[in-house]
Length: 232
Image 1: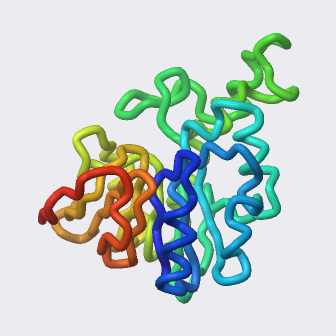
Image 2: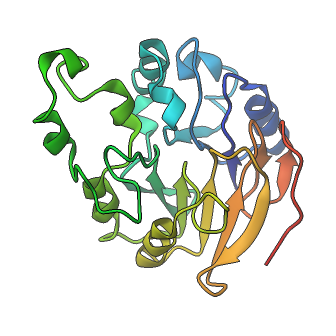
């Protein structure tokens, strides 16, 4: 059993309660942790009870401390962004971060397909730790997106939403189809809902802020938002 956790935004008690109540094999965080201390410290009560995986959200790049407490934590190697990992017998692909107009906001063409393309345009004052600006470490680049097309997965987790959401992107539908995924889970919009895309081939589950869902999209902990009715 795998649990999917909507954007914690600093509130990790629902995740802890969910793991203690349901004893999952793993829990996947869908971004925007907003960590005031390292992720392993926040989840110290459960890291010996389950596998913890995550994708980053846009707010995880808002502050140096939030960034370091996620990517520099003892769970930093559990980042699913840009790769496929087998978890509890299912292949899970991850695409964290958000689309940004400066880099690539579909349906427009990418302005900077790779991080290296962006870095070449950054002066010394624009760089962060001799790399691209911090916020673009949680931006979706074309190169990372298309690299996933070559892989196969059962489930795709994203921070951004596909076309099932009014603010979603069809490009994520296309990625899920290319992966062969039949389920998607996403955060970012703080809404619990379930509906299908791609003519019913893929079931999408949005997960509310600090909410918890199971693999079938059943809301186990409602979090901060009101649940929308299940739609087909």
